[in-house]
Image 1 (cartoon, helix red, strand yellow):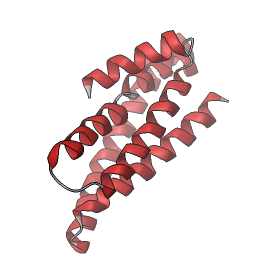
Image 2: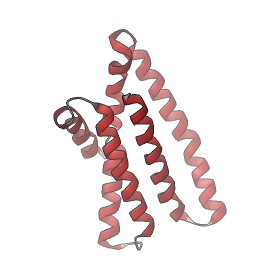
Image 3: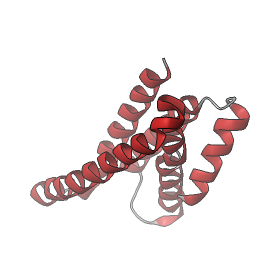
Image 4: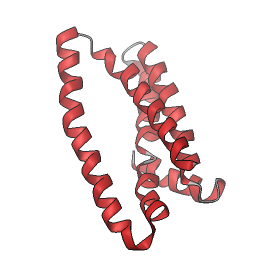
Length: 134
């Protein structure tokens, strides 16, 4: 995950000329595809392990670019407040979402539900990043 964050910052600045939303979109689309591949992969073994590493890399990679978007979108004067609001919402959504996902897996008995769900959330993130980029 940490390697993803370092690489996403570099990709954003060097390859996409500091257009952070493009790097976020690329990583989120790849993460969605990897999560879908994980939903079809046989549990255990090296292929699943590699896919899990890739999923973490691409899902958490854009985190560095999300925080860097705050000064880009809101300027120097409001960047601290924007970062605080983003941080608040990210923890609130994680705090609410994870128990709901856990409950869904408990009720259905299917732990494999997490992968299509992650794929859908990554795709939604890519769409939102595209909207932000406009």
